[in-house]
Length: 396
Image (cartoon, rainbow, N blue to C red; front, side):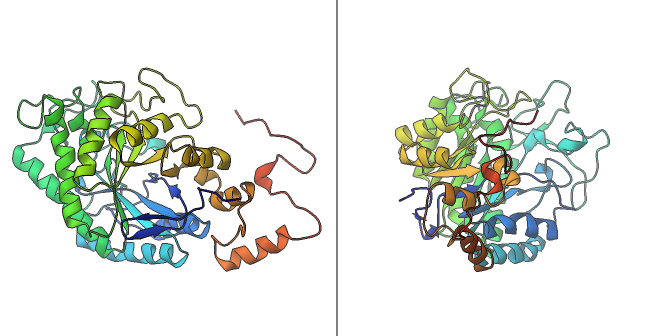
């Protein structure tokens, strides 16, 4: 069959071989901001598994903006060389390497999720050294029992805008072909957008126009510093149940498109520990594709390309999102952790032929040979076991 999921797409001067994107997923596995062999193996396996665009996790433009002491960094040139090794490996298998650039603002200086997630009891030095100050639009903590951040000065805001641009230059030198600005999930840019977190009375606070100013300035500066032929994404929380609604995201998306953002990545929630919210304002829950309505509406009303994310699990589900015009790309996250070869699996289920040309020949040759064998073999991802027909029950 002709599959839109496996149809290449051109974004500026970059061609993705399919519409499948590895969503940026935090692994908190760095030391002083430095990548290691872990990141080569972690990201490389998705490229070898057939993913079109492989995103490096949230990478910080400023050491103060690290969520944990184990975040990756791009605030210094010393990070470039280790990243080149990873981007070269990703490209070797026909995938495109991308990187998400971020600052956590008042959500910085936390423990890793599996170590409690909350603010660190003992404040360490910054990754790389020096005192670790929390900064935000206003002196408003993330939660009432969290530390109070320092409100950024106008000069501090200008420096951070420039930090995104400098990080984009380094990302280009490191071999990345796509940059995504992280403006979602309660991190610094989202904090500026939010009337709950942003209590400023200057040109960066108050009205919707003013609260969008920092996001637009970051996008403008990043676009200025990022090569013209390379696409720029921005991830937003389309709604957050704390005062930011889908109508605001549509207006923001229009402004982002005007300054050169090519794709709006549509997530939700995160401003407070209530975390994510569902597909329509005021609703809650985590059904399949629960954030897709955001991508659909922003795509339609802002006339900008969008990427859908959030419980996109099955091949036919992803294909339908694209075919119905609800988004231009689909980002797969935790399902890829479960099955790093999700694109191979999806191609077979959708009847894409040849089904194994998306992956290295060292894999594809043997899988195609098995597929042509006289004795039919159904992959393990399709059933619970040899003698267990039908779908298996989810584990609890």
